[in-house]
Figure (tube, rainbow, N blue to C red):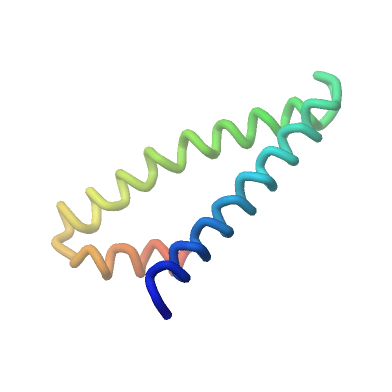
Length: 81
């Protein structure tokens, strides 16, 4: 497989994720504050913010402090995802 084909695959996957996310947010905004839409938006935004903090802490804990290789640290993260 060539690099242009791989990059095209990444671009398609990114576009698909972006469209799915935008669709979910648009649908959730149609509901009132009392409905599930407000809770869904709050949960989505909290999870998105926490993912960055947790990911950074994971690398610091296992790679920097634990002395594991970066590859093994990522494999451990993949095993619990």
